[in-house]
Amino acid sequence: MKNFKQQVDQRRTFAIISHPDAGKTTMTEKLLYFGGAIRDAGTVKGKKTGKFATSDWMEIEKQRGISVTSSVMQFQYDDKHINILDTPGHEDFSEDTYRTLMAVDAAVMMVDSAKGIEPQTIKLFEVCRMRGIPIFTFMNKLDRQGLEPFELLENLEEVLGVEPYAMNWPIGMGKEFEGIIDRFNGRIEKARVEGEERFIPLDENGEPTTHDPMMDSSYFTQAMDTVELLDEAGNEFDEERIANGQLTPVFFGSALTNFGVQTFLETFLQFAPPPQPRALKEDGEISPYEEEFSGFIFKIQANMDPRHRDRIAFVRIVSGMFERGMTVNVPRLDKSIKLAQTTQFLADDRETVNTALPGDIIGLYDTGNFQIGDTVIGGKRKFEFAPLPQFTPELFVKVSAKNVMKSKQFHKGIMQLVQEGAIQYYKTLYTEEVMLGAVGQLQFEVFEHRMKNEYNVDVQMQPIGSKVTRWIENEEDVTDKMTGPRSMLVKDRYDQLVFLFENEFALRWFQDKHPDIRLYSLL
Image (tube, rainbow, N blue to C red):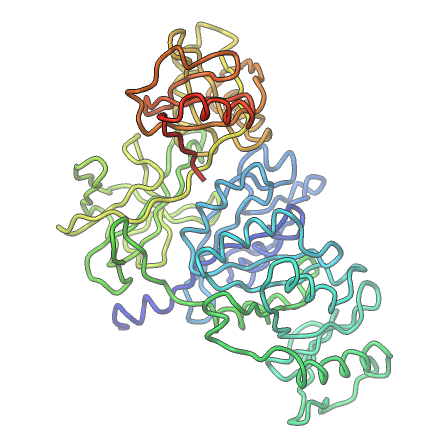
């Protein structure tokens, strides 16, 4: 039987990031397919066929054909135990994605080869760079006409400031797409050919060992010349620079037609890191090889199974072994909780998990104890992991139940959905009207949809526009006289005072008039 360290080293935990519609969820499906976790890979836009992506389980995702929550899935491939997180691409849900990126050791960046680097990709890349995690790039949709491959590589360098290393090179594009020259594995991989027959080995001089009619095309000659140029003048392959996020291995392929995905997966698993240490709130870090169990909660999801009104807290295990039934300490609460009901996921399929190791993601059935960012510890030591990012909302609405008789369901629903972290809860000081803040409008639409479908409450929302939000270090010095038409004072869900300014000008005016009030924002 393998020892603890060997088992930990077999874990790979990564997220797939991209701009919406770059093929992220399709790639997730194909990876699950290769891992034997699903028999038939559905695409996101499977509305007409009734075949939906496994990782999109929420009703609104199936209706719109987009991902708005992070899904967590596990599968085995060769000797590796893989935890894959499919994140929402839509910018209104970037907060969920940012927190998910705190729970992974590597990221796969999907790029639509027809569009290049898009705005949401830039934001997500910056978070990965901030954490110094390795990024592997998949240039997707080569089965369609797109930008020239060199242009895509320049895009990475100029827009993201990361050096690319082309692991393979495409032969043609769109209808003329014939396959790739696999620089890393020393072979040609033909498109539209199944099984091992799709591979043609290259000899030590980089020449094909057998002839194929495809090689008579100008596209093949051009691709071979380019690979020779890359070998002589391109960036050098450097494992250390990949590990710290300075060099990104680039793969060309098509997730939809399943071309290049298996080759990508095998190479990725070779170079993606095993579970990494986690920084503490104070100085120091926790190694994945430490014996005592520890982890942190990076996501909470209510009603994954609407029949049971359940609430799941997602935990990234940092160290030690998790065992079902164990008791953990939660420093924020200063109390112990027995973890009796636990689960692992294949999207909405679940199974009870009895043991799990560092790098694994498990779900804890929660009655309302946990919050995003909580540390859970199995041993006697007391510490907390570095906090997860929280965002300052920009858009606000006042919200109420259309039917006052449903006040109880309304408040229960709001509090459960707020604890997931996508929307933030506020109330006016004296009338205690409920207000919600969010990073983007789509979050309000999802909130309204879920209140109706999961809590049977119709809500009415009154937009109050965008605001500049600031918390206050010295609350005791704030008085009612400081408020006005351009500066509203409310309380957040923790009863902290918060100023909502009409705009940046109103904020500057307030700071000039009240320099003694110390304001701060979240991320």
